[in-house]
Image 1 (spheres, rainbow, N blue to C red):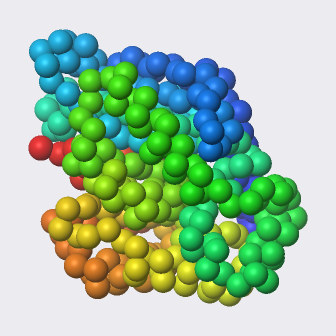
Image 2: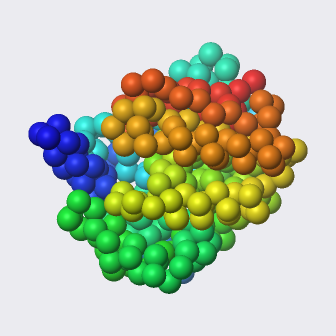
Length: 315
């Protein structure tokens, strides 16, 4: 009983503090440029972090352009000393090591801070599947809490369509104009974990002409934490059947662990995988991996980050 209680408390902390404020991030490899309060007509302003690998300056002087990886939960991507839990993806370290060994083609990372504890779930919950739910189910989700703690939506309406418009119509044009990057979908990818995995899948489905690949780690296919029915996953899977991009020119990566929150994912991921097969995806453009014993943490995602990076940029 004590273990269950501790796990519940940890999840509550994770989905409140994880979405909250952090101090300024620093990197040990490459160069990190942080734009404070990037303004938007679609969503609340937030910090955006652009990571440039060490090869960027010299290589771009020679006329080469870089691919772009957009990543969610920007607060948690680079600097362990700045995060709420002392964990981070360590993107700069993992990517730099692979680039040094010429295992990846050149790319930059655009880390987008989430909207904080009051907005993260509202911005990352795929909007069309949500709107396909009955009005009673939508109301229950808006009124629900996680283990009696703060509501996941915190009084906000689902606004993931607006969040994607921010990325596609405001942030990407800025990146394309400011940095020496390729702008086509073959060089524009998106990645996230948990709810960030869901919004990454939603991004490539809603904007297949923008994003050519998506990496979805520990994808939170349950959608919430308290529902006893199967309505939310069914809505996601129904959406996938009608909105997944064509398999011939898109690539999608999934993975999950088997511990803590990730223990809920294997059965749901198998259902998603069946849809991937139905839509024509195969080993040339799709991968689903399971990591035995891996938990729902940044440390776990850091430990296997090299795998989705190679899936996206390997050469």
